Amino acid sequence: MATNRALKGRIRSIGNTRKITRTMELVATSKLKRAQDRVVASRPYAKALRDVIADLATPDLADQFKLLHRPARPAEGGPSRAVVILITSNRGLAGGFNTNLIKEAKRRIEALEAEGYTVELIGVGKKGVGFFKYIGRKCRVERPDIGDKPTAAHAESLVDELMAEFVAGKLGVVEMVQSNFVSVLVTPPTTVRLLPIAPPETQSKGSRPNYIFAPDPASLLESLLPLYVRNQAYRGLVETVAAEQANRRTAMKNATDNAGDLIELLKRTYNRQRQAQITQEIAELVGGAAALG
Image (cartoon, rainbow, N blue to C red; front, side, top):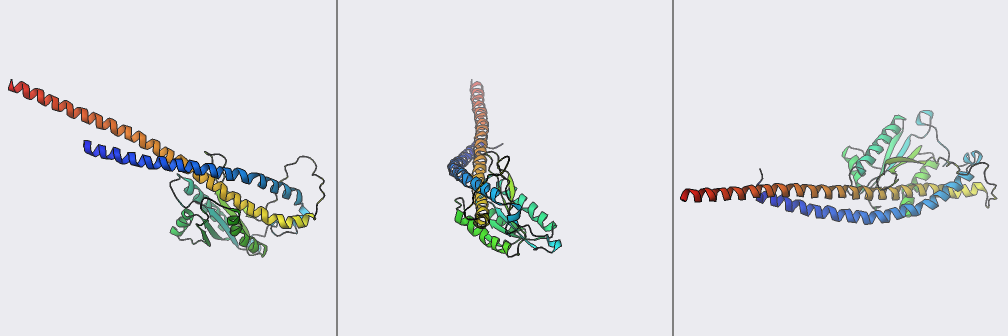
């Protein structure tokens, strides 16, 4: 059984740890609010862009653009290279956030390799890069610089080179492994296929609107398709950052609560031992006084 001095030391140590986890919880809460604002702000533009492309991308026009064309599989003579972009965080202490994303990336890599692709990995965030280095898989590109404040320029730098390679016929598939920020408590890992672009379905019911396009739809698609890919990448970055902060806040809150429970348990143990010691000392005094009398 631990001595009273050892118990007091443990109580003090756990109390200091609880202060740290509580502070980290508050910081994550503050960052989560800003990250949520970026997610919400990105959705109207993404929806408008998706709706416009859905109205423009007719089957006839789709055949003219390589970004919309799905190449043949490697076994059928198509490109043999594929790219998986994995987004993780630069720091830990976020529960199973990074682990779940890494598992999803491993699953997609194995699936693409089973189709005959040679998969290249682009790692955004130190945790994913570190894991794949540990198991012996090198990353084509490492991007620890993006951090928790992604911008449209970051997304552009991630996908522009990949789009050029895809159009040149050097890549068959580009996928992004990210978190899907549904709510603060629901942030499942998911895979989004960036290339080839799957034309989004129009949300309008019934007949298609009779638009007058200026310039023509083909010219509009030529400008909008790269924007669509960049926007998909940007949304993946901001949603994953929001999911990271949500998971970190939850993990730090659980750690703070557990530290409080453990402190209460140690205090009860300390008080019982102290009471037992006092009782024993009183009994010894009474026994000694009786012996002298």
